[in-house]
Image (cartoon, rainbow, N blue to C red; front, side):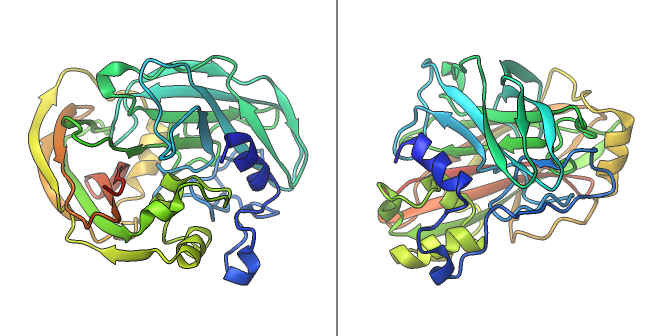
Length: 348
């Protein structure tokens, strides 16, 4: 399925051709709920298929509305090639004018690391209760050093408002992040950066939850308006779960972190000083608030205030040959989920 058709299905709110019969929830609400801290606009970069705009939200790093092309059947880009990035923006009950999306890429990270600016979209107006595809006018070239596994970040600005909490999609509906990687066979160590965004030292824990999705290869070549990697990452949501039922996919909880080995964890040079005091204070209030994902700790360290560290993970196939493996990796500092990363191994 090409990306233009995928966008057309999403814009028509037609995630599933038989969605109502399958019991799938509407993926794009006609009116978006707002939090008191939100900006004056009613725009949203959805963190999930069922995101209504209410913040905080977890997980927040798997936005299915950040798009890129070209990619292979499992949504992998190729390092060193020119890639077009875009974002499908949903709007609530107020018109939005002079809407501009800003795009960045970052090294694989469990938080928001130092970012690299890609470019912006052309300004657009988005009527109330509608959506629009905003395309970056500058190509993105994934780098070889990370095998093309970068994180993508999007922020929206418009005449009616700007992000209240920049680079924090958990706090701000005008911010989106896509941190999903479909791994290649025989991948070298997966590098991940950790960062303590607080001024004070904090205990930082890496947790992993794991599941197998049997017969995941049936997703390839289908026409549901959702990419295979997004279905796997959001398999608990009504729309993706309906696809799984229709195709006969079976979701199995696995021993958390099975197939993952921590091969290195060490402090690194640099600083996590990228957030203002208001954002840090808002993050502190989230301590202990995220729902449990059933993950288990695989590493722990004390990070100094604004400190950074690097981890390297070995990820090997452990599932039956017909199953995809989805590892959800989280960084938790002082009880606050700072960020996450979804690593997907497709069927053998």
